[in-house]
Image (cartoon, rainbow, N blue to C red; front, side):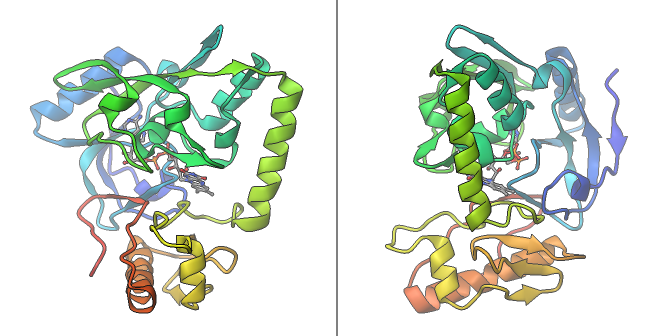
Length: 292
Ligand SMILES: Cc1cc2nc3c(=O)[nH]c(=O)nc-3n(C[C@H](O)[C@H](O)[C@H](O)COP(=O)(O)OP(=O)(O)OC[C@H]3O[C@@H](n4cnc5c(N)ncnc54)[C@H](O)[C@@H]3O)c2cc1C
């Protein structure tokens, strides 16, 4: 029988460090355990949400009425064969990159500063430096209470920071197609990209990455919010990063409500000053929405 924890704090599972309790929490380590957990939730009519590193997640302060899963063990393992890298949905990008470099496989360098997992990367179609998951993903093995199967990027509906995946569909494994590259070259490129990151983004603060998607406008979301004078703007314990205005930092005792209030204010200001309706990139978990 799978181990279930009641009332696990989502604040421990998100990089911003906010969020109330999950109705139930489990860490399946095999496909069989994952199927068992999904069946347990289905029998009770309980929703299922999978979290990776929680690096693009804002969870309700009141908690989430769902079985929350975090994949481990086999479901976070990484192997490679020729130019294919196979990663469990819970494998972190850092571990995938390390494995790829050791195997002399390039193409994953763009993800070096994205602190998520393979499953979160598919869900978000995460990307940076002109590349994203569509550039490397061959297929993803998706498990649900009704059955499982491999889906291609087209079937997953990947577009800019978007997929068609819905809660209850668990990305248990992915296959990436990479290409031979000397490890020293990979190492040098990664070092350079990480230095660039540190110079422009608050990588040492508790955040959930980009708050808003970049709009179709000459200014990106960060520059737009900076022009609205929002850098350093604070509500409760949440602050718009003084370094990059498209990040919200947890400056102490921030709550999800604080972050949502800041997001609503940022959206209002962008609408007033630029006539642009910003769309949030961060995923909202639980009974919360962005106030209008
Ligand atoms: C400092 C910082 C920098 C960042 N930089 C970037 C960047 O450059 N580019 C970028 O795109 N993003 C960036 N992000 C955001 C984030 O890291 C990415 O979106 C990442 O892909 C999210 O992965 P995760 O595993 O943390 O997913 P989570 O945040 O845990 O979850 C995100 C969504 O994916 C779903 N999910 C997660 N795992 C699974 C799974 N196995 N099966 C099904 N659904 C799943 C969740 O339910 C949720 O809806 C950054 C975040 C931080 C904190």
